[in-house]
Image (cartoon, rainbow, N blue to C red; front, side, top):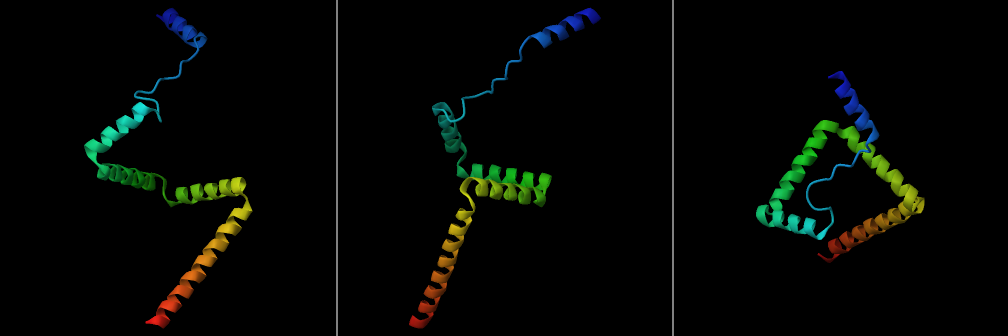
Length: 113
């Protein structure tokens, strides 16, 4: 029995491992799109909202608030590395312009009443 086990182990070491094939159509293919559409027609959009909410709740319970802070920080660093600091300067200016415009519109609306 021991020899047989050794032979199986040796055979397993010499054979290259084949990646496991996932079931179903390849992601992004036409067949995958049709499958998603069929699920949408069968269950409706509320189904996706419910399962998405359930998944988010599960992640929140398992990982906690530090997880979200960490992925936010990593995302900010990636944005900084790919788009540069100028990106933040540009969107900061846009936010300031919008805030001033809202204030001005609110003042004008108050004067006309």
